[in-house]
Length: 84
Image 1 (tube, one colour):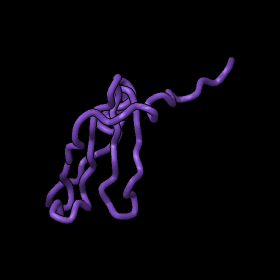
Image 2: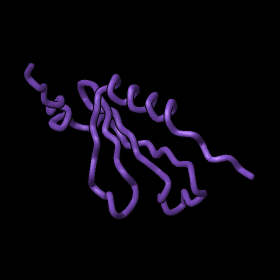
Image 3: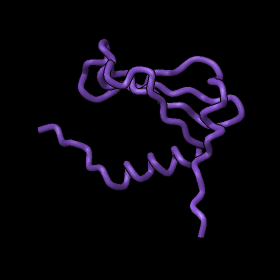
């Protein structure tokens, strides 16, 4: 069985439009410490950026299916904190 490589063409696709900020979490959205930014790629797929200074300029790209599978995994395995 031959291992397949990730869809590297996603990284050659230009971003379509502006990145949207998805913020939540620790209540510090004004400094972007609890945000991700998301944009569609021309030709399909999405680019996700970390908005923290340490992650500036880094992107993760994936197909819709890859991102939906990832999100479902998070929903299935992560227990949200309870507010006491």
